Image (cartoon, rainbow, N blue to C red; front, side):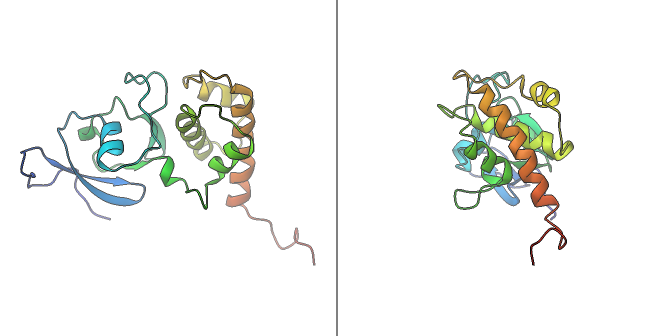
Amino acid sequence: MAYSSVSDAPFSTGSPVFRLLVNGREQAVQADPATPLLLVLRNDLELNGPKYGCGLGECGACTVLIDGVAARSCVIPVRGVGQREVTTLEGLGDQQCPGPTQQAFIACQAAQCGYCLNGMIMTVEALLRRCPDPTDTMLREELRHNLCRCGTHIEILQAARQAAVLRAAVVAPPSSEDEAP
């Protein structure tokens, strides 16, 4: 899919129009180039997975994937996205068909208030894309910069382990030898 990061023609206010690839779809948004990606995602594209937490890139509530890498959308200006693919929580699955990482967090009841959940899920998703079978040490290291004030850390780690199992089943479905006659 060919697209440009900024169009030639601004809208009526004079702000440039950015063409972003978000959750597999090209989106055009008019914004000041310094506008944080988080605000564009939430306000312009009505994607509510990423949350505004600290606004400093410290808590992880705003985490999205940019070309598969976990990134804090509150500190990335929309001009910095360019032609890279942005994936939000909504891009992993939906209520009727959640993705494997989302399924694991639901099954393990890995949330109390749920505010940090977006960041936790997106961080685990990024790790599992890089390393399908992480150790507990790797999981803890990856998640150490995501803040959960409710204290569901045990359930979050359990969900991350379960996500690895579920993703492995999706990537490598059972062979015909494993199926019952």
